[in-house]
Image 1 (tube, rainbow, N blue to C red):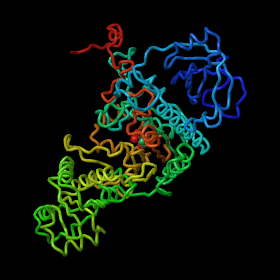
Image 2 (spheres, rainbow, N blue to C red):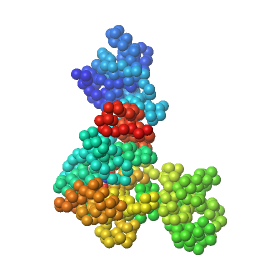
Image 3 (cartoon, protein in one colour):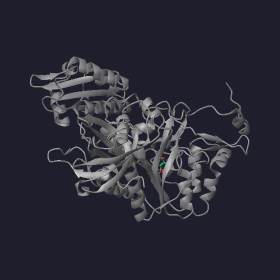
Image 4 (cartoon, helix red, strand yellow):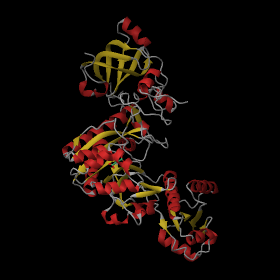
Length: 588
Ligand code: ASP
């Protein structure tokens, strides 16, 4: 038997017991002839004391032991003498007095320390030695949290009558707006499988199959530009239900997350229950984005009316061109330095603004770049509408509506971080609904699906296909949290005629539609039930729950920011023989 207990489970109640432990040497100290090891396994860390009265060969061996050696220790659990307890360790009331030590495996000198959070090397080194990085307490904790989240989801959905079904990884292109990863076929020269960008088609076919309520912890593959912290493969809780309307789907997910939070992350609080629900239009007008951070106010206010007669050129020309004047109020920021305002102006420009007008509300009257252009009446009206008080700073954007929203939405987040406006322990979940069905693709001069091509348009809008496609709303919804989109989904098209129409709108030719989606369209002719679903991302959720700032911290073996696995060194070249079998030639 390698061990009788784990290191982390021992408590004062075990005092007097003989135990055998196995684990890694986390730290070692030597004090007046006595050696102390902190022995670590996944469950935690325990102090092992090696007194000088042990046999000489054991003591000789102990003298050589270094960090991260794997030891087996036989000893007895002792309560630490009064005053010697370590309240910072879960096992801090006890220590193990060793009787015998066996080295199970030594370790080379480590590329970086596993104990402690300081002095971490750059991320590529961590990823190259990910198996060591994962030994760190924080990373182990993240992996355990992820396990708990997924386990909770499985158990909960099982109780709600969902069944988990695995769908193929090697399939056919399933568009979600990204490029496909392709897998060449050896048996069918020149033909390829595509890795699914999501199981979208398959879960809909499961509904046609009558499975009613499906879920899967699904891996999705999207060959996208590596902006932000995207990963080429990521995990979703994919789910689909038959005979449901939008709110039935939202309820399942809202109830699941509401029940899950106290079970997996008791330190996190929901901002509100039930979750707020916004229309896409409303949320963009109020927060400048369709993935708002609701943990703080500082909302966008449309003050076009206030400035309807303004002679301030910046405002006047924007309004005359059909644009808007909007603002946000940064609390207690009236005394911001010139340098800070300049930096904000640069940020505003990077977000698309031509400049940034500011108005500081001070006891001596308005200050800031807009001060000399606004009348006392306008200031009065502005203060009434925005509720700006003395000491606040008003920031304006005047331009076309989408530009203004983007600029102020971005500035709002800058103030969030600058003034610490958001409580990190709050999870501000919300729904965004009533998205536009199509987005105009300027480059390719055609309509794209805003969500994906299987999304149901709102029935009231069905007659606008030929007249005003841009105004058609879809039955799609997003779930947002703390400034991230954490899920999206929709009620699906279950009628072949509508599905066909959408494919045509998106510019697919008839032969194309048949070749790409013939199987779906045919399935819809055999009694497809009305259905809908969604897919909350798991990586991002665990990231937020773990207080991490990128998803790589909650994925065991992620690709780095350049899309490489630096541990295994992938992607990598393959043998010419393999290429030949696959009928592939590399063109330099
Ligand atoms: N397949 C969609 C996605 O991956 C989610 C859904 O519509 O259920 O975003």
